[in-house]
Length: 248
Image 1 (tube, rainbow, N blue to C red):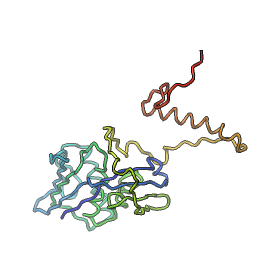
Image 2 (cartoon, rainbow, N blue to C red):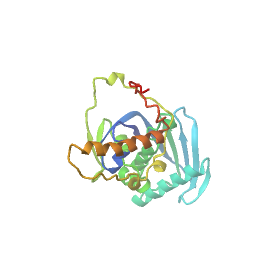
Image 3 (spheres, rainbow, N blue to C red):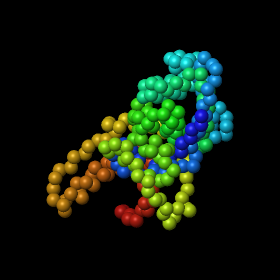
């Protein structure tokens, strides 16, 4: 059995998409494939290959997936074990016993195009379950990466009331001048995101429309200040801002 899903790029939305904001996402030609073969063995053998076809992770489980017999990374092996258990809970007929599984990425792992989301989609196809249900059982992300990985065209995604993706056309005049810039700052979403705790409410006193902009300036300045510190920018040297007034 062979399965494949696309990678993803989130163009708009960022972490706001976690709380229902509409986001534009593009599926990528780079993705991840999974090959599953049934063998006469008393264990489940798993191997993951990178874009250069070199193995970067391997593990072996007993057929009940209760014991990790051997692995190259305990943390990843435990995550994969949790993924198996969630899939089996969603589909009691899912039986990976005696299987040999080989996964292959089309992109370098540190690009952040969705090594986890493509894995969840492929396993969902194998277990014949909803990728969104497996996502909700094993991740705290928005789900846009799942929607993009299952699509072959750009989508608008929102999870405000339910997972909702709508195919859209994305063909700006500058499309031939778009470039993917790799900053080598890939973050693990499960470590970076705690959905219900990432927002802070700043209350501004009610006033007339003429004075309101002055009151809003203060929290916006604080937002800019702490955002700059978080990103490691020098707050005393704003980017693209030339000094035009000198006071002696």
